[in-house]
Length: 252
Image 1 (tube, rainbow, N blue to C red):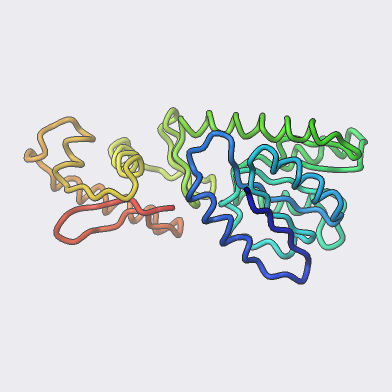
Image 2 (image 1 turned 90 degrees about the vertical axis):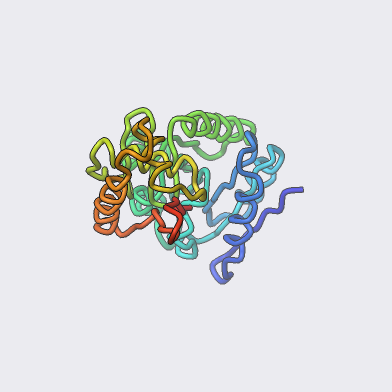
């Protein structure tokens, strides 16, 4: 049974801990996702919660956007936002968090005017449903977006603030491209693709350049030094030195 946690304005947020645990233990499942929903109407929260739970999803629900920790947003696979809320409206909140997350954002709204919908999508939302809505349609929309995200993960590596586009050969931090050289990018891709594993300079050199690691592995140290300097400017540092052994990627 999937546990769903409903929170109000006055609650703390143990739900985020539960959400992190569930994502860790179920990651890789095609059908299960961690979903954040914010709506000040509890009946709507319960309706959506029960519907998405039938599809095996884990829903963390809040009645107030102000209570959602911004530094935990990257743990969600999809976000559902009501537009008309008392503390901060859905449009403003979407605009606030869009640069922090790359997951799909869906609006639930009583507004049906075309310019409102266009405005919301222009802020970075991916889809919308107008109230009243059929829960079957919401479930279908949510699962369609999650399937698309699942397919895209096969061509991208996504960590906390870092996303590596394997097809474009581009690394971004907070959606800002990091100006890596080809060699620097390849080193990052190799380490990130094998997150948590420690590799010697010789192993990295041979894997990245397809040349015997005994040739000139000192260049790896130089490349990693340059990469770290660029990461430092972005406020992240995913490459860790394991003294006497080599390097590993530890970004979550």
